[in-house]
Image (cartoon, rainbow, N blue to C red; front, side, top):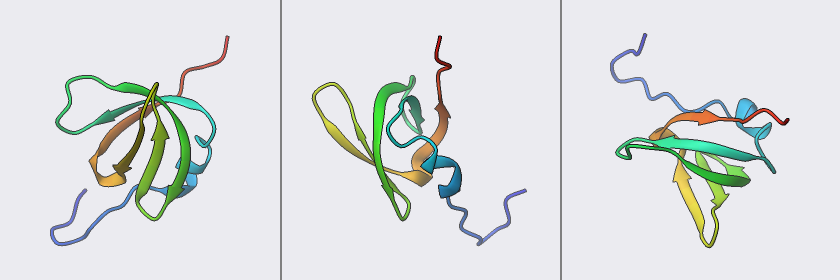
Length: 71
């Protein structure tokens, strides 16, 4: 349960497993997720590379991360 006044951050240990992988990230305020390669993680920021862009995302804004299984 979320306690009032306590700031929760995304667990970086789990995100470190995503570095170098293509994932689908769902962010608050967007209806669908987007595919991107995770480049690096520092503090609560995630640097990802999309088709033609590099994007910095605040970890607090991420609702879900999907890691597709390799076939």
